[in-house]
Every structure is written in C-alpha cells, then in structure tokens.
Length: 179
Image (cartoon, rainbow, N blue to C red; front, top):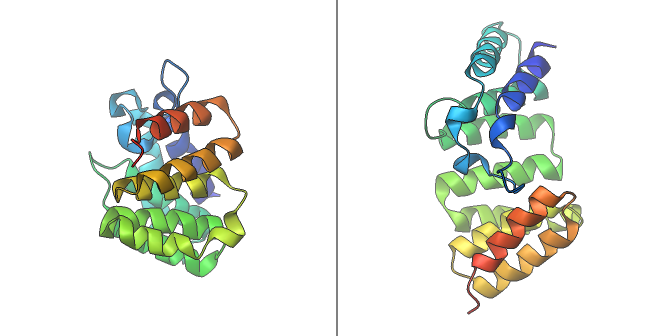
C-alpha cells in the first residue's frame, strides 16, 4: 500500500501544472515546477525512501513511485536512474505500455535513435494506443524525419482520448515543417 500511496501523492502533486490555461496538455519537461505541490512531493519521497529501505523487493507500484520520485527530484530527471528503474519494472511487467515508457526513457538517456529502435518492436501491441504514436512522432521529429513525424502525430491525434491531448498533439504536428 505504501507504494501506491506514494505514487498517488507524487502524481497528484503535479496536477496543477499538467494542463495549460488554454486547456492543452503540458508535458513533464515543460511543466512549471513552482506549481507543483511541494508538500505532496515531500510526503511521496518520504514514502518511497521508507518502502525502498524496508529491504523487501519492490513491486510495480513501488517502482512506479520511485520513477515519479526521480522525475520530481531536482530540476532535471536522472535518466540513467529512470532507465534502471524501468529495467526492474520490465522484469515484473512486460506489458507493451511499460516497455513504451522504458523506450522513451532510453531515448532521453541515449538519444532518439535508441528509443526509436525499441519502439519499432512494440507497434503490434500498441497499434491502438495514442501515446505510442505520440512518442514515435516526437522521436522522428528529433531525428528530422518531418513527414514520418507528421504522420505519427496524425495517428496519435486520431486515437487521443481527451481535448488536452488533442490540442497538444495538434500543436506539435503543426510545428513540424513538411520536408
């Protein structure tokens, strides 16, 4: 229960910064950290430390909470630590979504080519999931593959489930200049 409580606290702490005043999704890297709830983050970090110090092997919720703790610790995430935590999580949960999140973390640590190579094997299990195409679009964009990035953004937009995500993805797509 400690892991899930820590995860909930760390997730809720960022809620005020997740959507812009225009109703658009704000990705973690672009969030105004001053809008995060410092008390919830502190409580979440304490619970993560307590749980990890218990000596019991962490379960999925503890690992997800630890990943969130790293994201909320300092000004820039430690991508090496995040990938290491995802490596542990993948051993417990090989779902395509966990592997997608790991691929994004690898891309942050090792570059877009490395992340894209990991994403390529995930498409069959995630063909109906907008975040797969959004991640793919972002990596293709970073690689300068404008046409492929725009196509992936279009797929993500078509599958997105809420207006904040659609607005964000549409802006991202429209910012990519055709080749």
